[in-house]
Image (cartoon, rainbow, N blue to C red; front, side, top):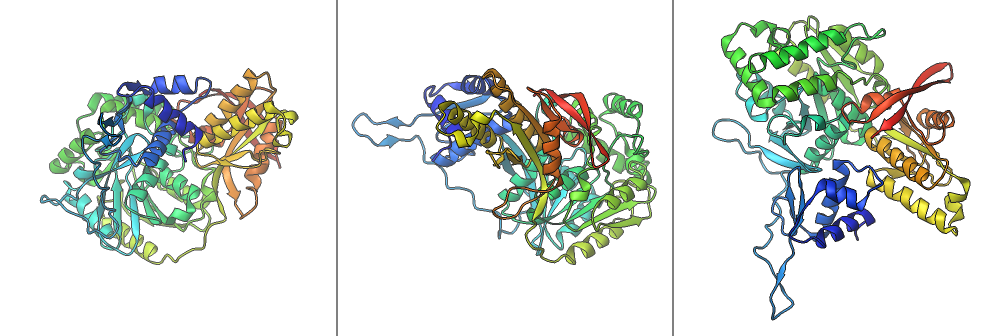
Length: 545
């Protein structure tokens, strides 16, 4: 049975059979008063396809025009019968990769596959048949097939695959995955969805994760949000925050970041940044040529600059204490891209994390003494034991203040019934988990902060249009999830206090949320500062979504 919004999508497409319906048109016509992001619309399309038994790779009913829209293709019926006549039968679904030995092409490069994440194709490879699944998250830009063109990198990956089933992927917007407009480069939240899509595609229910450099923050967020999917986490040469601050003296200044972005635009096509990332090979002609080509294959100069600027906004320091999975942080003592102090600081914020400092100045883990990194990684991951289901996880909580007369207890009131129906649809639309609709404490929880903010913004906007005095608050932090009980913990308490401190018609978020949605396009303005238990929490008002 289709959910209401998925049914609306199907009905709209059917009434315009054989016509290309643009994404913007679909969202404007069906939900004129609701913000709908690309991923939410893609989710509804996926639900329709599931109900129809339609294969997105060889569609019979719904054709996708990438980044444009959709076309419903009605099945022609013979005039003399009621039996549909199809041009061609839908192909059998491709077999799951689980249990099938990974294929390697003749040139030694593993076969590349694609997983669907919303409306984007994510390129991935599977190498090895070890006892554990291991997801490798490369930093900044990447190119799956060009990994294997550099012998040192190929050796590094083959060693990882010697004790695991190694899962590699290109983040959306880079490498072999779908390129996206520069103003739609992936947020951490979307990258989490991509990891989950790849794990689902290969039949991986639980995996260890290795995050390199900029891949570290993504790995942290995924592990904290989905501890049930992560057996262990290794971060190599990574960081908690990218820019320097009064309480983070190690990152580059804003001026230094601007200068680096100018260098990207002026020198892209050459070995940009090689002196800091691989100083031991900076004068090696073959490696310089490979690095320059790898960067060109991985991203355009515009995409590289946009990713660099977006990454500069990331700050996961408040998230690190909520990590529950076993964690190893590895950092080289003379790393010229990210200082060893950054790795040590990050490990200090993670519960029971191990920190390993190794000699060397190369930032890229496959350059220099890669064996030390590989041995430490294998020893750590092979020593992991099966952990019980986590009762605590990172989540984004949403509180909504609504008029008393519209709460569920007044179900006999038609206006209350319609209003709560709208609230439930907004929660479902943005993939939230419904909470306590009676007290609103919390109204819903989400596995992504941007979705929670947009859901709250849509709810408040709807209330204002109805002449209601309503407001909302959103915060991300560790929550306790016990069977049969609502989410609990400090995060829930803080979100409730945030709601009480804001005015009618506003959506306020914590600084944690603001930093995590970097690149989402959501705009904020400073609101006020909430003091709770002697700690100050800067709050921000959502200006636009």
